[in-house]
Image 1 (cartoon, rainbow, N blue to C red):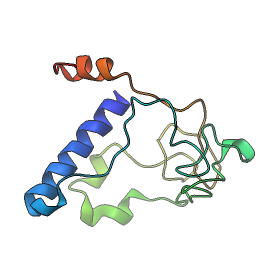
Image 2: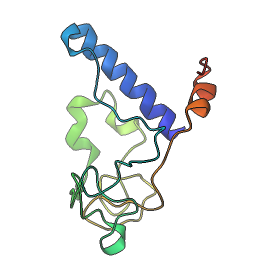
Image 3: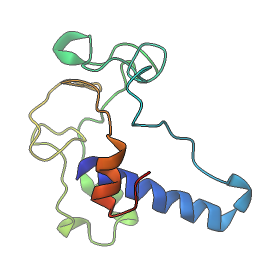
Length: 131
């Protein structure tokens, strides 16, 4: 659901931008169905898993990308309809991360392996006709 949500969200953003200015045509994206070459390397978005201490990302465009600390949802109250009831308050350690995250690294952290979409799985999930 995580990837599907983000793909749907980006489609909504793209459609909103096109509605404002049709010259935009589309957002740049990477084809998540291609396994190699991967964008998770030192040339592009950094290694996955991260190669720094505690799996922090220390290479690529997101090298040492800071994660906000002392996060307080109320700082964004003017941008959120109901900040007290939106369900997101940051991590218990004060970072701008999931409310269940106990990571205390001050920069972007990646675990596991790069994710690759299987095109037919995406079409099945989205209930679209595949190729």
